Amino acid sequence: MAAAVAPAVERAAAGIKNQAVLDFLRKPKMLLIGGKWTPAKSGKTFETINPANEEVLALVAEGGKADVDEAVKAARKAFEESRWPRLNPHQRARMLYKIAELIEQHADELAEIETLDNGKAVTQARAIDVAGAAETFRYYAGWCSKIYGETNPSDPSMFNYTLREPVGVCGQIIPWNFPLLMACWKIAPALACGNTVILKPAEQTPLSALRLGELAQEAGLPDGVLNIITGFGPGAGSSIAEHPEIDKVAFTGSTEVGRLILQASTGNLKRVSLELGGKSPNIIFTDADLGSAVPTAMMGVFYNTGQVCAAGTRIFVQQGKYDEFVDQLTKFSAGMTVGNPLDPATKMGPVVSKEQFDRVRNYVEIGKREGAKLTTGGEAAADRGYFIKPTIFADVNNNMRIAQEEIFGPVAAAIPFKDENDAVLQGNDTTYGLAAAVWTRDIARAHKVARALKAGTVWINTYGAIDPISPFGGYKQSGFGRELGKHSIELYTQIKSVYVKL
Ligand code: ADP
Image (cartoon, rainbow, N blue to C red):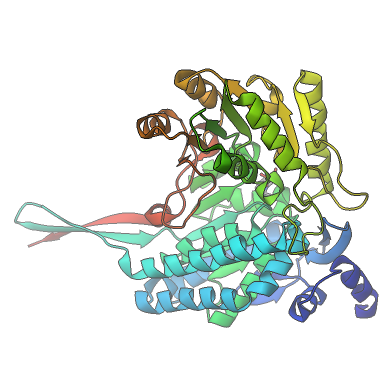
């Protein structure tokens, strides 16, 4: 059996330098429940594909309702009976620091796993995803000992204080675009607050979360504190969303599925936080530093092959510089190195799946039919693998579908605008509100526009900066609740008011 599987792994993992990655790929991919790796109760598995060569990378346990039930039991037991929620905060912090250290020690290996499973450029996986994952654990390790209650100015006959306590058992459902980083954004703060977790990675990219589970065990995390259920949305995901014994669900993914999660949560009124889609405006005034705006706008939309919820997909350029800017965008895009994501020179790898490949190409056709001008790209970039050339549409009207619907691929829409008012009106004319950017040398205008934009994150003269110190989340249909910073601590705790008769 192993001999039959191995050649497929070698093919799927072609170009891999790290022996540890091959060793990991060859192992069976099981569910982590109560500290034990177990197959799905149904015995079913599913394939995860390397999008760069379309080979099957691994067979992964397909968790379903029965497995979620077991994971919930384990997480509940760990929450009620283990010391985890009541652990001395310094000890909990040490555990989180240890996970951060292990992520760093295994950084090259994790980056390669991420690249094989997701298709992202390995240099970016290493510098952004894995580095960010370790940083997130380290940041929240610091919070363990800084979660304060308050003493309140009560009547002298009473002493009143508040305790900030963990919410309980948390279900966390994450997408495929930043598999390891999203896992860490969710797990680290939940654990810092003393919760127990059931994580469901996306079916397209389950591998790095499984490796993270092993590292968490190596760090000494008690059994049942972190459970990992791989599987599909309907099945594993929906069972988490509707489970009566799960106290909170945190979800990152499409707005469509966010709605389903919210509906499913009503049974036991579980707490919900949703980080959903976006169609973010990147607004460039004629006085901006164009030398910096062009490459930054390009990375704002093509980074991670455009599979970023906060991608700056609507590039608004003020009339007067519009033609020149589009020209430069087109040249920049045409010169981008698209190719094998394991090659350190690669700037853009394939999209994650055949489904995504078809979806993006369909949007290119929609854009053409709507009358937008395709200035570069739009086609497949290789015979094998889900590669798509960086694509720019010019002369886009903000009402077009390519300007209103999230494509989640390397497709930018360049839209002209007249003045500040027009930029804000068009920028806000979307059902989403995740992020936005404004480029100008006029400091007052920069801050005025930042205030006027309805988005959870606004960048001025840059794009895409993200740091665990600062909240991230959406206005409008981009979701609610804020992750990162102290805001994740608020998501993963609840407050108890205690009155003492003196
Ligand atoms: P995308 O469209 O980008 O693939 P999705 O929103 O479909 O994103 O998926 C994000 C995550 O949500 C994945 O882990 C997926 O398995 C999960 N998911 C999909 N459908 C459901 C559902 N009905 N209930 C719970 N989770 C789901």
